[in-house]
Each structure stands twice: as C-alpha cells, then as structure tokens.
Length: 156
Image (tube, rainbow, N blue to C red; front, top):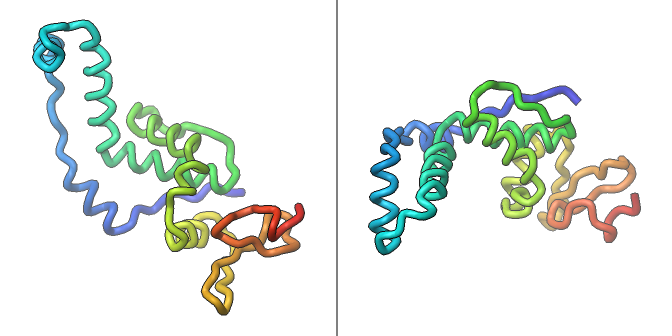
C-alpha cells in the first residue's frame, strides 16, 4: 500500500494551537521540587524530570502528528519508519505505531468507521439494522466492526 499522510481535524487543530510551551526548570529546581514533595529526599528526582519532559512533549503538535501518522501507517500495513529527525515526532510515531491495536479498541464505532474510511481504504457497509461492516482481509465475507476479524463472521 502507498503511504497516506494524516490530516488533523478542525477540533484537533484548535486544541493543538492552545498548547503553550513552558521553559524547562534547572536541575536544582527539579531537585528542590522533588525534595519538597518527597519529605526532603532527593533520590529519584531524575525520574521526576523525565516524566515532566515526557508530559511536555506529548502536548505538542509534532508529537500528536507523529502519533496519528504512526496509527495510519500501522492500519495501512506499512513497515515502521520514522520519517523525521525530531525526537518529539518520532516518540509520537513510535507510540502510535506500536499501540495502534490497543488504542483502536478504545475508540467508539463511529470513530473507527471514519478512520477506516479515510485512511484504510476499506469499504464500510451499513446494514439495515444500523450495524457497520467492512470486507474481511480475505475478501470473501464481511466482518462486523464491533468485533473486527472474529471467527463468528469470517473463517479466514
């Protein structure tokens, strides 16, 4: 399959423009914050700094674009490949690619159907009773989007 680039929704663009970058505190400030919240002990302050840096990275537009592009690439069956030299984008791409199946199970049915229709190029069939179906990878039988490739609907 060819690579499709992820296109953010208007709501995502709106949220991502609201993100403010914060200047990273010095090591001494991290140590003092850690000691204050851990009864005067400074052991482990580096993990606190790491968690702070990760939380700042995950809130950026580059991370979110990488996250969604990784999901799109995984859904289309492409090989893993970081396309940029930005650590923030690559972290998002890695998490999006490796955690796609798990994340997809948390999406509602309508979100899965929109994502598939736009990025996976699979035909979505709406049954008369409202249930959404898509062709199975084998191409012989339709598969329910609620349970995806399950044995109840396809024998491939």
